[in-house]
Amino acid sequence: TVIKGKVVTLQARRVQGVLLQLEITGGDLNDFFSVQASSDLKSWTPLAVLVKTEGTVAFIDPESAQLRSRFYRVVVQTN
Image 1 (cartoon, rainbow, N blue to C red):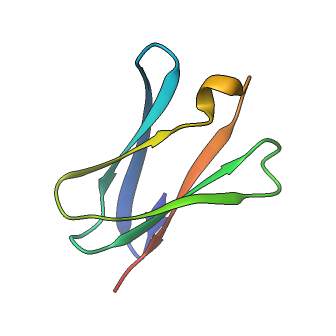
Image 2: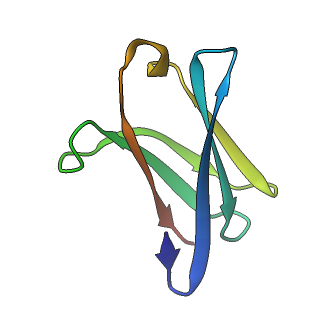
C-alpha cells in the first residue's frame, strides 16, 4: 500500500498452527491502520484499527482458523 509517498507492507504468517497474524511495517509513529478483510475483493469489513507505537504493528485474526480463505488490506489514516 502506498499513501502520500509512504510505503506500508502487510505480511501474514501462521501462529499457533491455525491463526493468521498480520504484521504491518512502514508508516509513521501515531499513524492509524485500519485492518480490513474480504471474501470477494469487492466488499470489505473492518476488523480492527491499530495505532503504530513502534516499528511493527501486529494483529491476529481470531476468525482465521474457521475460514478457508480471506483477503486482507490495510488502510492508512495519517494524523
